Image (cartoon, rainbow, N blue to C red; front, side, top):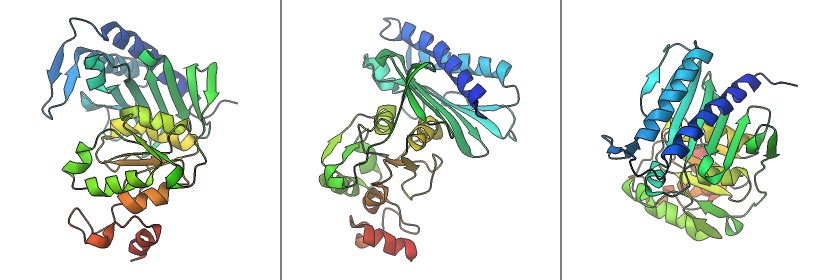
Length: 289
């Protein structure tokens, strides 16, 4: 039985097919044009071509929906209840250097909730997707897919944690908090970008966290993690991808990780020393306060 968002999910796959053709044509191209954006991050002609292609298709197929993309911002009606959120190439630095771990991220947000998410990593020959109520899936197409499910690891000492870099935590004066969490975990790896979160959805990783992200970095990942049985929140524990940072888990480990990384209301980088102690008891105490 088709769900409410089946047609939107099928459209997301069509958008991803077109994106894959464009990105694979430019991946490792000798004439790849790389520029630096004002925030000092790289952008390539492939990023721009993919976002332009997705916007053109959506302008015909979903005329009433707005679009929010990394390269061109928001277009369409500011009052639209439906918004497509696009990261044309998540992992642009990998793309530029010839590392195959990059992907196109496509999501549909309806009334402030992500309803559809798709991640397409053609250089890895992999794709992940989800829609609310229909589970999370991985495969090459809608007809060739395997259902995703998070792990059942319940102790940090048995957990695998993935992240992108130490630098972001250091810049926000949270490095010691993050390192305290890594010391408690069984294994840590910097898989980075989308890769951390789809591995979590598959049960290969148990925790993933980043101190600063944009909505287009997270929207597609949010619904995939949730439909795989996990949790996706900001570092203050607010559900969803709208808080500017992320903690994703298999659900069982979420409060334990928040005890290290959680931002308690009223306590910023200059919080008291005991605000982050690595104890669920302490975090609950601050929440109750």
